[in-house]
Length: 265
Image (cartoon, rainbow, N blue to C red):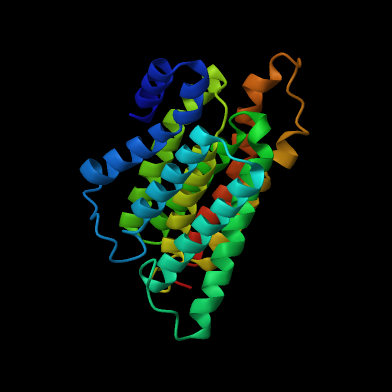
């Protein structure tokens, strides 16, 4: 669905504006799966049910930024506010939820913000490499799905796989048409992936913290992928995403194996 929606948005809105707003197709695909495949609740009662709300917030904010294209400092400030709001809602149960009454809650909040800032910054850095940011989000979603599956967290695994499918649909079109990666993809993709990671990192989850920590290596797989000889320079843009997927598979596989060995620890 994400692939078809992205194509329609680009066709209707035109090459320039269509490329900027086509990232919304990821949200449409994920929301459709959330509603009809996962049959998940829309009321944010726990960390897992808040995933769709955090994703909607990221894509909506990113979409507005892509349309109005404000100065860089405004984009950074809005991204920081989005990260703070998403992290706070996860540990407190809502945007205006109560503050944590234990040091552990505050520690989780700080970690969430650090991871959020790190991933958004990383995706922004690789933005010029075409679909590299999408590949990173896709591989993270696959890794989270495998960790959830190996840990016995079926609902979380299914949610992560649906997110991965939505990302894969847009990745295919972005790869073929060389679409620009806009703020909607960066904020929405990172927000959805990190919301899923926070759900798996919740104290009630059986997922291994060690397995989740191994996925931190995925956003840096491009450093190794760039060193792989990919043949003629003309073919490199088309082949490079495959090399990036191959390199990112290693930490994803290690995370899945670790989750299986240390489930609940």
